[in-house]
Image (cartoon, rainbow, N blue to C red; front, top):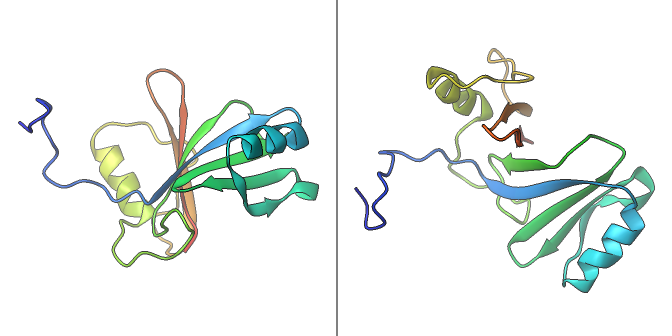
Amino acid sequence: MSKTGFEQPTETMKLGAFSVSLSVKDIKASKQFYENLGFSVFGGALEKNYLIMKNGNSLIGLFQGMFQGNILTFNPGWDENAKNIEKFDDVREIQRQLKSKGLKINNEADEKTSGPASFMITDPDGNVVLIDQHR
């Protein structure tokens, strides 16, 4: 047991940068709202209806008309500045570990490939988690 009283796994998965991908109704209004909270545009394209916004180490993706609901996103191999990190767990290894624990994988990554790939899982409350590797 750890100091918090919760048992810690012997080895933690290295999931990379974390962001919340928000499905928004009006990307311009959402951009303004998050700018008022101190976020600035970090990536994406307003004319393509998606923006990545950053405030310190916090990342929020704004996506208009691309998916329903909000998604928790992890990017193995990247830090919060979209810079490569040296040691990370490949998306396929993360997928194998989760499958071995009995989790249902949606949109599985092809385990015979390498490089960019992604998969999704859904938590017990219906929240979608995207593991999206860009390198």
